[in-house]
Image (cartoon, rainbow, N blue to C red; front, side, top):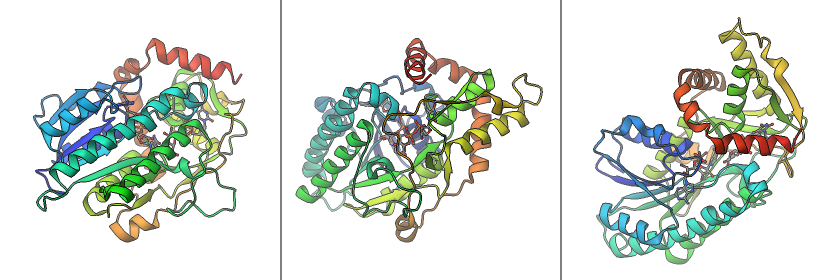
Length: 360
Ligand code: NAD
Ligand code: DAU
C-alpha cells in the first residue's frame, strides 16, 4: 500500500478504529473514509483533531446499509476496507445479545456482499488495482485456555463461549468463506485485549482508572485470577498496517502483546500508579477500593496469543512494555476530563447500574 491509497475504515470512531485512523493520518499513510454508526461506543471527539484534514472523510451510517456502503465504494474506490465496526463488550452481549448478531454477523455479511461486488467490478481483473479486505477480530473466538495450555495459534480450533465471541467467530467464518468460494482478497486478524487512550470506560482498565480516581469501588469479577494477554492499542494498529501492506490474502494472523496477566495484577498495578500520582488523595492506598464481586457468567479463564507467525512472516512485534503503556494510559485519562465527561452519558450510567447491581 502507498501514501496515495484510500482506506474505508468502519467503526473508526471507536477505541481501536480511532487509534488506527490517527496513526494513518499522522504518517500520511492513506486517505481515510470513516463509516461509523455512532453507537454509544462511537465518539466523534476521538477524531476531533482531524476536523481540518482534507484527507479524512466521515460518514455516519451502518455497515449493514448496503446502498450506503455501495455508494461510498463507488465514490471513493478504496484500496482497502478495514472492518472494525462491531459491538465489542462481552458483558453487554450477555444481557442483550441481539445488537451483536445484527452488527457483528449480519452487518459483516452485508459489508462483504457489497465489497465482493465492488472488487469483482473494479479490482479483480485490473492488475493496477491492489485491493484488501481486513477483518479485525478477537482471540476470544478460540475459547478459554487452561493454565498449562499453549497459547492460541492460528490453527487452534474455534470454540467461542460468549454471545460476543460467537458473533465474532461467525463473522470470521463468513470472511473465510468469501475468500475460499470467490477468491475474495480478505484476511483476518485475531488480537488479544487492547488498552490505551480513548477506550470506553466500561472495559476493565479505564473503568478501574476512573473509579480509583473518584474513590469508587473497583469491582473485580470472581477471584480475579482470569488471565488476559494485554497489548497497547498502537501496537495492534501497527500490526494491522503490516497485514495490509505485506499480508497474504486468505491468511489469518494472531496479534498479541506477549503480556499475560491475571486481572487482579492489572488492578493492583493501576492502584499503584494512582498512589504515585496522587499521594495526597484520601483514597491512598487505592488498593483498599478493590472489591471482589459476582463473576461474569461463562467467564473465560485464560487467553494467551502466540503471535510468532506475524513476527516471522511480516516482521511485526509489540513494542510497548506494559508499564510504559499503563502509565501513558492513566495519564491520558487524567489529562482528558472533557472526553471522560462526554462519554459518561445517561445511558452509560444506566448500564453501569444494571451490570454491577447483578454482581453485588
Ligand atoms: P468499540 O466498541 O470501542 O468501537 C466500535 C465502533 O463501531 C464504534 O465507533 C461504533 O459506533 C461502531 N459501530 C458499531 N456498530 C456499527 C455498525 N452497525 N455500523 C457502523 N459502525 C458501527 O470497539 P473496539 O474496542 O474499538 O473494537 C474494534 C474492533 O476490534 C471490534 O471488531 C472488536 O471485536 C475488535 N477487537 C477488540 C479488542 C479489544 O480489546 N477492544 C481486541 C481484539 C479485537
Ligand atoms: O480478548 C479480546 C477482547 O478483549 C475483545 O475482543 C473485546 O472486544 C474486549 O472487550 C476484551 O474482552 P474482555 O471481556 O476480556 O474485556 P473486559 O475489559 O470486559 O474484561 C477484562 C477482564 O476483566 C475480564 O476477565 C473480566 C474482568 N473484569 C471486567 C470488568 C469490566 C472485571 O474483573 N471487572 C470489571 O468491572
